[in-house]
Structure formats: structure tokens, C-alpha cells
Length: 75
Image (tube, rainbow, N blue to C red; front, side):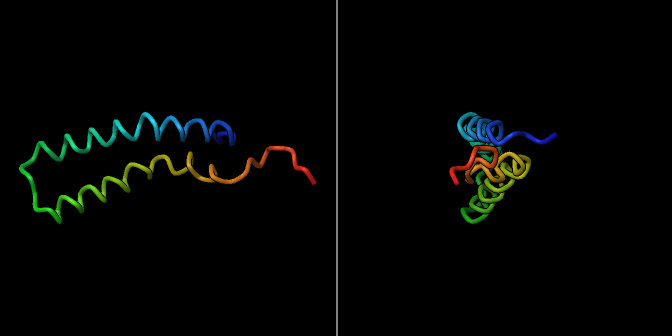
């Protein structure tokens, strides 16, 4: 199922404004459950978690920064 350009823009905004802060709080909470690792290991964990959150939403963010392909052109 392919989303329209406008739907992808709306979903990307929802993901960034609502989903990302929830994910950040969850990631910090999970890391805090364990005894604090060394600073480099902790940095590596946060970098990995920072990359992993976007992978399931790649199809939503793809092409959102481009002009609307369905918009009428002013040629």
C-alpha cells in the first residue's frame, strides 16, 4: 500500500513530533535500568538506538523533502 505525498508528509510530522519523543524517553528509561556502562559504550548504545528508530519508517520519510510530484506544474 503506497501512501500519497500528503499522507507521507502528515505521518512524518506525527512520527517526529509525537513518536520520536516517546521513543527517546523509552530508550533512556531502558538504558537507565541497567548499571551505567562506560561513556563510550553508552554513546554507542544511543547512536545505535538513534539509527534504529528510523528504519521502520524509511518509506514514510522517503521523498518528503522534495516538491509535491502530484501538484500541477507552472510551465
